[in-house]
Length: 369
Image (cartoon, rainbow, N blue to C red):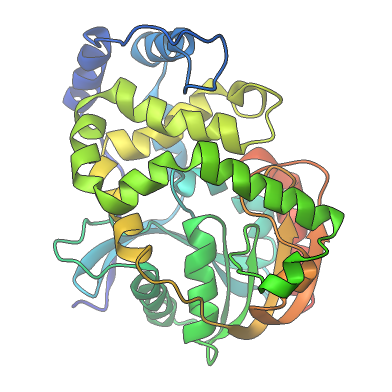
C-alpha cells in the first residue's frame, strides 16, 4: 500500500464517447407501459427523448472540464484505488470535512456546493470503491464499515488529525460508521438521511413528522425498493444489462431522481437534463453498474446499527426516503447538537438545493467548533 496521493485527471477517450453514441442509436426499446404515469417505471417517451438528447446534444467534456479544474487525486487504501477531490480552504481556521455520496449519486452531486463550503472547510470528496473513478474491489468485504475505515485512513494520510464528516444515502451510513468507529479523530457528523431504527414503543403515538416518515417507509417498501432487493441479492446479474445498455443504465438511475427529488412530477423541474446525464456518465463511462450495486450485497446482511457517540447533526428534507424525528434520531446519535426540518428538497439535497444544503452544513458544524 502506498502512502502517496497522485494527481489525477479524467480523460475519457473520444472512442468511448463514440461507442456511447452508437449504442444509443441502436437501442432496442421496450413497448410503452399501459399506464400514462410513472407507476410502472420511467415512461418510454421520456427515455427515448433523454437518449436522443444524450446521443445528439449532450457534451461530456463540459463536466469533465469542471472536474479537472478541481484538485483531483488517486491513492491506494487497503488494496483499492480511491479517487477523490481535495479542495483546501483559504480560511485560516478552516476545518477538514469529508463528504460522501451514495447510490445512484456521485461526486457530481457536490459540485455546486464546493465553493461555498470551501469558505469554511478543507473539503475531501472521495468516490466509494466500485463507483466512478475509484477502483473496483476484486474480493468481498467492502461494506459500509470498511469504507468508513478507508475514509478515516484517507483523512489521516492527508494530515488531518481531526475532521468532520457528512453524507446522504450510503454516504449517511458511511458517515455514521465513521462517527462510531473513529471518535478519536472524528469531531462530528452531519447527515441529511439519518439511518435509525426507533424502538416499538416510539411507534405507538407517532407525531405528525413520524406519521409522514412511516407512510414514506411503507411506500418505499411496497413500491420503490425493488432496485434495492436486486442489488443486495444479485448485483452481478443486474450488471450485465446496465453495463451493456446506456439506455438501461440511464433509466435505472433517472427513475430514482424522479421518485426521490422534490421535483413536482418531473426530475427536470429540479435538475437540468445535463446534470442528470453528468451523474449517469459516472456509472456508464466506468462500467460501474455491477460494482456499485455490490455495496448493497456487502452491507445489507449486517442488521445492527452501532451507536454514534460523536457530536451529530441532522437535516430533514421533506422528500427524503427515510425521514426521522428528533427522538428517533437520538436513539442512535447520542450527542445530537443540531436538528432541523426544512420545507423543500429531497434525497439529493446538495444537488437539488445547494444553498439550503450549505446553510445546514455550516449551521450544524458551527455547534461543534
